[in-house]
Amino acid sequence: MYGCDWDDETGEVKGYNHHGFDGEDFLILDLETESWIAPRPEAVLTKRRWDEDKARMAQQKNYFTQICPDYLKKYVNLGRSSLMRTEIPSVSLLQKSPSSPVSCHATGFYPDRAIMFWSKDGEELHENVDHGEILPNHDGSFQMSVDLDVSSFPAEHWDKYRCVFQLSGVKEDQVIRLDSAVIRTNRGNPLLLFIIGAAVAALALLIAGIGFLVYRKRNGFLMEGFEVADQTQSSVSELTERLNQPSE
Image 1 (cartoon, rainbow, N blue to C red):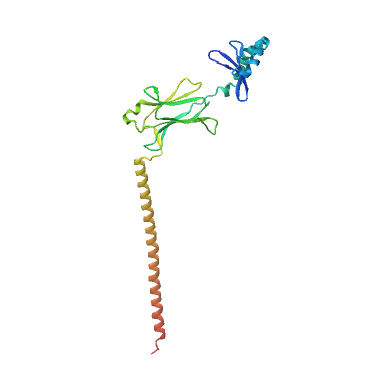
Image 2 (image 1 turned 180 degrees about the horizontal axis):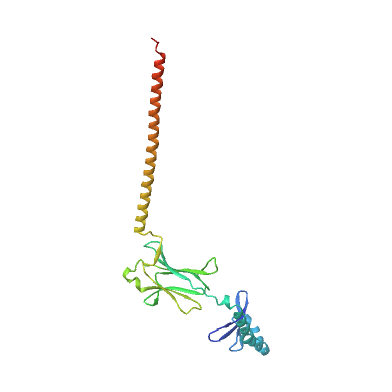
């Protein structure tokens, strides 16, 4: 494994060249001392031979301090639009139920080099905190969550807690205060539920009233039909009876 690191703010360059064998380090290049480090006894013989090769060491130093950084800077400039891309996330507080932890959720950020934590009075909290993993979104951005167990916190002390999100390459942190008024939850608003219930009840009464009127109208029509039919049958019977009487 070999390459170089370049700090674009300080200009510092670090080169590295590691050789491994059977899953373990075998030889490591030390540019400061211009020598090789042998972590295993089996590598000592090779270390001595490579240390004595001054031309090889000079070539290594030139590559890792000059050539590699030049190429790295060129690639960074060519791909700056994508390599230096930053997307600020939306941060919100979520809670399933009053007894559930409050989750600080950030989504839509890029790159994935981000840190999020809970703090109290400016100090990072470690107890009652559960850190989630950074997960990918379908659009190439990322999301993450950090849960805070608030079951033991008095409500009047909530304003001391903050959720802090830090994104690599962005100087300003995103901070959101623990506040019950901004927590998004799947619990319904009692007033809203009352209004919805009243509306549903009114609609049900309206439908029932219309149904009753339709029923009465149909029933009345049928009763009127029965009365007409009875009158017609009575007239026919009376006429038949008269026709059957003997003539005088």
